Image 1 (cartoon, chains in turn purple, yellow):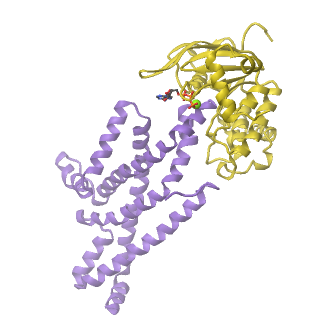
Image 2 (image 1 turned 90 degrees about the vertical axis):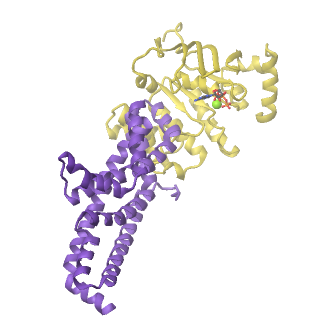
Image 3 (image 1 turned 135 degrees about the vertical axis):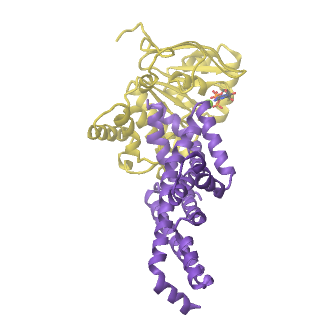
Length: 224
Length: 252
Ligand SMILES: Nc1ncnc2c1ncn2[C@@H]1O[C@H](COP(=O)(O)OP(=O)(O)OP(=O)(O)O)[C@@H](O)[C@H]1O
Ligand SMILES: [Mg+2]
């Protein structure tokens, strides 16, 4: 088994690496775009007027209430009927970004609301405008509080990007399937892929831990 | 300085939260340099009253005149708030900023003061409350008494015309109350105009020049500490002060 795995790696490492590249591209792009979507949705739900609150709430509930795969299929297979044709990678990034954005919005909303009363009042009391109070006082603290939740979100998303192979994106799972179908050692190929995912998860967990420590407010314990 | 015009004048102030009428027509005045203490039972509307004064709570009806300007109808509320310092019971320090930055941020972002000038001014205020050695500490690294003194320095830095205190020592351990009261006493002596909700009778008796007793949304009685402590006109005032003496009094 190990010799087969070693052989697969020597023969196909370039393909695997390309697959990993696409996986990371999907993950990073979706987390980053999702971050900005998440900020907008969270702000809309905390500070928006009734209309904005309503719109943001409906978006978040729809996204969180339907399977990611359904969202992806709607974009990839559904939109062409209306003349919008998106590539596999593009539609995956859009689907994952929106999905991640909805979840990130909820983490962020929770921490913004926990800061609302005391910190917002204090900021307004010295004459800050509402936008100043939000950007200078509330958000910087809210971001720090959601870093642990983001770590989880990133890891989920990394694993969920494997769904993109279903619409034909050449990410890790996609290339694994192709290699497997050529050499028929499915078990070994998927075992390698599993290890690659695991390694990436470990590396990014470490990175996020580092970021969390770096931005930790001295004297405050991180509440997990 | 015009002797006629009070610095702060509150006229017939009303506030209700839904059906709950909290302020039922509050009127009083403060002259420059006054230190007034508001006392009264819990839920009486003391916090609501001072929050209305800098519009952290919007009043329903009535007038609030600050230096001859009716702030209730003023368009730019942020400009009014700069003139009114506020010290919170739970400190309200910005937890992601050092003590120095807590004091600086209003100067830089609200008053648009250049950074180096703001830093210098902030250091002076920290020094004034005895905390220049803690400038680089974050709130979570400070004791309650130190946090509250940073809160006072932050209010002072904005050059307010008046500072409002909402039970500034209620969240403190007994041994830390003194350092905060001491700073407040110095402030009063330096001529700062202060309106203080507190149950610290020692402070009310020795530092304030008037005590306002509030109950159920109205001012029951107001007068000098001597008058209220020695011979209050109202029976309720007497009962309340008696109870407070029991709870908080330092005993002479
Ligand atoms: N934001 C609010 N929404 C609804 N009701 C409120 C709000 N703030 C205060 N109240 C109510 O107004 C009343 C007066 O509250 P307030 O905090 O002004 O009293 P207080 O005199 O400061 O009491 P304490 O001594 O306990 O601080 C209470 O019944 C309180 O429940
Ligand atoms: Mg109160």
